[in-house]
Amino acid sequence: MNDMDFSNWGRDIGEKIDKFVKSKEVMELQENIRATVENTVKEVNRSVKEAADNANKNVEQHRSKTYQGVSPKENYQDTYRPGQYVKNAQPMKEYRNKRQLPVRRSPQGSVSGVLLTVFGSLGAVLSWSYALALYSLSFVVVNLFGIGVLSIEIPLVLGGICTVAAASGGFLRRRARRFKKYVRAMGAKDFHSIESLAKAVGKKDKFVIKDLKRMIRRRWFREGHLDRQETCFMLTDESYKMYQDAQKELERRKEEEERLAREKELLEQDPVRKQLMIIVEEGKEYIRRIKAANDSMPEEEISGKLLRLERICTRIFEHVEENPEKLSDIRRFMNYYMPTTLKLVEAYQEFSVQPVQGENITTAKKEIEEMLDDINGAFEKMFDKLFEDDAMDISTDISVLSTMLAQEGLLKDEFKKENEGE
Image 1 (tube, rainbow, N blue to C red):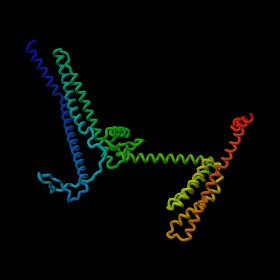
Image 2: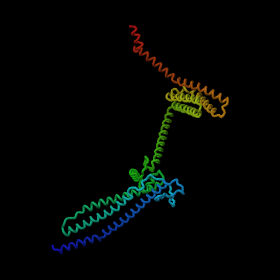
Image 3: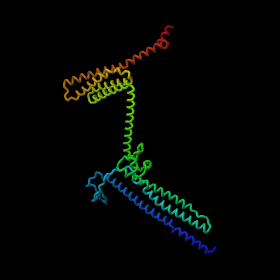
Image 4: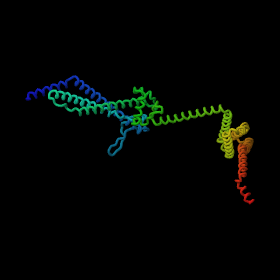
């Protein structure tokens, strides 16, 4: 093989590589690279501009808080000069005090996603192009020289890594754009339905729920929360607390309604129990009105009497509620004693608020005070009488038990008698 043969082979290889470079596929590849780079540069410029705008807004809001409350005449920048401290003649711009939303200003991916897309796409195009060129060159070399295939593993690996980086950058950019759409859709409101947010980003509800959860975990929404049914998004901790309070109140009302429904069903099935509940509720209303009258009267003497009355009446109704069979024992108490007592208490309350305490009013009040002592004593005796049957039953049980123990010779008195007999 002479030098001319090597020259011809080299020329053939060069022509084939040049033909490959000028081919339609390579031209399209170059055009795609150029378009990708141009779009990416535009995206970088837009992201940098948004970051600068956000920084300016933060500075303006900080200044707005700093200069809030300063009069227009005093709203000047202070300028330091060596040896003196003067007011700048140019007044500061008035800043509006806008609400600070608890969201991240620059979400992750706004810039990093662009950079990953740019360099990943560029690296992927170059790596795949280089791998394709090596493969074509190795094909030519094999046909001409019969030499083994050139190694293209490294550019293939680099191309794969760069492709993954470009795809990751695209994912980060899309997620950052969705976050900004969420924030724009939320505006100044704290409660937002998942359905409305899904429409704002053009996604399904399930996707939006998962998306918001990821953003909450990443602290993009610093105080974000989802409700229990995952149908509503709350932007702040305050709104979430309001939701929790409302949920607790709703559950409390539901439990109360269920309890009342069960009680109503039981009362319908048990007429005696129904009558008992009516009497007890009526009695509690009497006690409530007596307590209200007591709270409105500052006199210590009458207040002590009424407090004693409240306590004894409360004990009577509690005992009857626990022992429904004694309901008949308080019928006169409910039909006459309690209404008359309440009438006397409210009359005393009316006398107490009169601006002029004449002889008739003073006498009437004195008589009511004395009568309250009698009423309290009578009610206490009546309460004790409610235990009359119980006391008799206990006495009977004690008598029977004593007799049985005596018959068995187990009482101490019997032991004494036996010892004395011996």
